[in-house]
Image 1 (cartoon, helix red, strand yellow):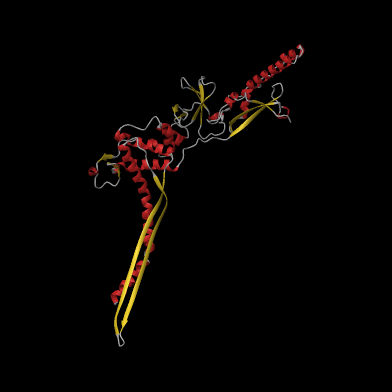
Image 2 (spheres, helix red, strand yellow):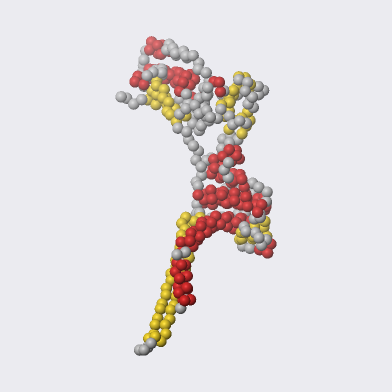
Length: 408
């Protein structure tokens, strides 16, 4: 009797421990998320060792649940005779069930699978030879597109201190300027250092800054941002390949595909983690997009003869889209182009007069039209930053976009 009571008490106490077991199961399930990612990478690694041109696979859990269910029951029975208790019985039962599950989402995007394929090819190159594809797909271009937003990044020029370098004029002149990186607006004259491109001697402001060419490529992007990218996959061989019997008993990181086994020693776990993070990057994120700085539209108004005038008196306007930080005062540098448009307009008027039979005195008057002299020349325009939009130095290329102002 007493033993039965003790058993019943123990079973009742176990019911109260369900929340502890649930907490343990939940934490354990969370740990397995990283294991799921890593194991898929290991199996894919074995697949690409078996065939470098294989198609990778990857799925990630989006939902998970952990359940702990417990129940207990008991029975008591008595048999009586008319004069006494014949016998009695007591019974107890209990059970506990635990269930865990994930909802997995596979990667089906061909562009993401393409990037993963390139990453695995690069990861196995040091151990198995070969390398990532350079044609259909071109892995370097695919990596550039993903991380930089463009397949063929434009080289930039800067000093070893990270200062931006701009070349002024037509590109053939010897003088160029060095602009401090924090500068977003047009820099002060005191912040600009001029160098002779041939001799390297300082022309203005004797600050010792020797410029160097640095390509805006993925390697410099990785170094500057500190992120794990495909550039981090270059490494000496960091895993082993063999049969199942060759795997050390203490090895915790093993992948297999069609009888091909790979295993990673402790010294290679760092590269395995980098590869896993790279694959997760491709799985969860889309390719980067080039940031496009804000722009403004600059308008220049002309009268019927092509002379600059006020907006209310204008017949034509010249438009161009430039960076929002570009200095509109630099329009003075393009006044020659405005005057050229004016001259073309004068020639159009002449042709119209001739077709209309205008007398010689009117044509003589048009021939004698004088062009206004240019005002004082502004200092050479200095673009604040290198942007995908035309600077005002390139404004003349768009000045041909002359449109008549609608009649008011």
